[in-house]
Image 1 (tube, one colour):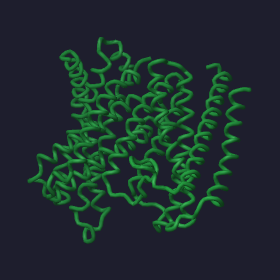
Image 2 (cartoon, one colour; image 1 turned 90 degrees about the vertical axis):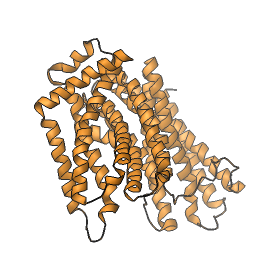
Image 3 (cartoon, helix red, strand yellow; image 1 turned 90 degrees about the horizontal axis):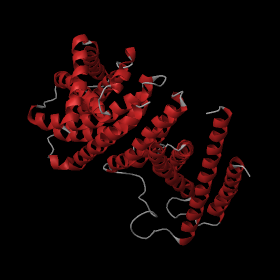
Image 4 (cartoon, rainbow over the protein chains, first blue to last red; image 1 turned 120 degrees about the vertical axis):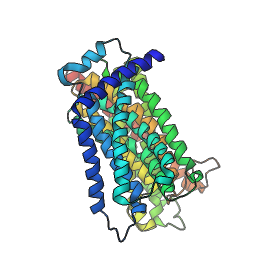
Length: 226
Length: 221
């Protein structure tokens, strides 16, 4: 287990270092997030719909779209110079390769979300101060689930035609359960409702994470082996 | 008799019996008191829905065994089941609104059952797109198997997540813990229809399986 995590960390560190040195993907993703939030502002009538009613939708549509950008990048960058073959012949277990990619993707999405959340608060004037901790916990819970599935699928589509488009088409049905859960919990948090109202959705999010992280860790080997 | 012909005969028998289902449903089954003739669509809608979901589970099971046994037959079966499931999901999604317009007053609503069937349909479409997007057949089969297993595991989550919403859709009246609350003659028609849809599923899958076998022989795969 310790060896598994050490290897996973090595893969994640490599990806993050690469990202940190070029910074193109992360900057684009952050700008994209800001742009989506801006577009949302023009897509509603502020006199008819209050920001608070629309807030969970805005937040989660922005986060899921931004996450999909990140997921496309994960294995695409390994295609250049057959870097993926290099990773596969190295003494890495397939599971740790997946975990490494998952960690890097999670870090990437977390950065985007940590910029997106304050921007969202600023643009839509939604007070989140009182519920910041539970809100961050819900964001983490939902993000883990769909990034786990997305990382698996991004390995699945790299050798196909129209990889970017196919990833979105395959992933969106899988985004719906965590999205529903996250939106419902967020709405209750922002509306000052007791958390006990959202227990069902929280259980759903937790179960989704457990099932899909384990399933993806197991299935990943079938997507990369020749 | 070749597999393709056998599949054709099963399908033809199924289609003939489907006409029988119509006759029985329209002429020999009482009209429902509140919904009137619109309720007749129930005899097509529910069996199609049951098979649309069962087909996804069978895709998943076929995929699991394919990954372990590497038996091409399992992959062919999963592909065939997915295609037939897509058609059945399409039947559910067309018959539903036809019933919904007179009864609910709207073709479509973002109701739990409707949403979950729509997502099932998208899942099938994604599966078929992925199969079409990979050139190497062995690689495509493996990728499809991974997606098939994930899809099978997703179905209960879609159900759970949408069931937490309130629903407009009629609650199950046959497949529920207590005894079916349907008059005997309606239940008989429904069971007859379920049998016919089972036959159609088997017929379609057999044909599709035989076709992909022929395709593989022709292309020397």
